[in-house]
Image (cartoon, rainbow, N blue to C red; front, side, top):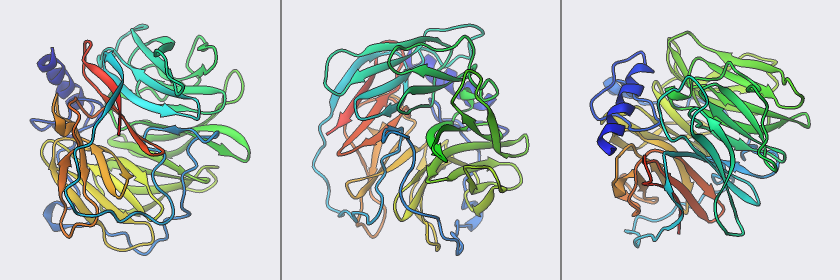
Length: 395
């Protein structure tokens, strides 16, 4: 089953990229691009642009989705000592392809796809809810085709599925007969993101589609309106989105002008490319002082740290199969790696070292799946098919 899943995922990635897939690419939602930034000696340079204000305005009610919850303000520099083994706690075992995570003050939400095949009709994919007070995991909503990126606000859970963006009532699990935005339906491409935010006091959602568009959806009303914040050429992919106040940061991979971009949440001005050196970016995180970026795959994947105030980028890790979801946690950078059933699917880059030092964190699982900093805890999914998938936490 696991070999079959890996073969399927490599096929999915190859079909979703303009470049041929490299042998050994990601086994899940992360895309593979043939090249990586810095090939040929180029190093991304942050230029002299101010990265904007610190903090993450991700969820309207203080909730988090995926990597939201990264540190803001002054950062813990960490140390270079070999850390003690970290013990994990499995919160939800026996899942079938658990993918992404979102959380608020009361609950944890999980998208479980059951399959990565794009299905023509309603499938077995579902959204699960686990109370922070404990107890059994419950099905909030089901009938999805391949649910992926997920976000939560005070009233709803937003799920990016193969058929579009769905709005699910977080209390009842009810959803409409059709998606609230059907154009954002390229979840199989990988690198997608859904971010809940506020614009002039009203609830909105930002979607990095994994295709050529970044879209803002106004979520109020029976038929919410949407606005394209950025549209690249057909061979470009918009991946990884972070909302900081009323600024959206995102990655563009491929096309004629790849890099790290920003655009106003109101859409009143054109998007601006800030760092052109990142050419095959896959996921993005904001800290108070830096951007964390993953790119590439197939043995050439990299993790970068770029100062928000300008200056040279720092290469944290390279030679990776498909890194995704970098986060700052306890003075180190953690990320998911596209490795099947291995303790290396969740890795840590030690802080305070003169050269980059990587450690397998400890739990055994299948990546990439999802990763979420939740206060003093790191939540993760092990994205395995059948009944081998799980959601866990460290410590």
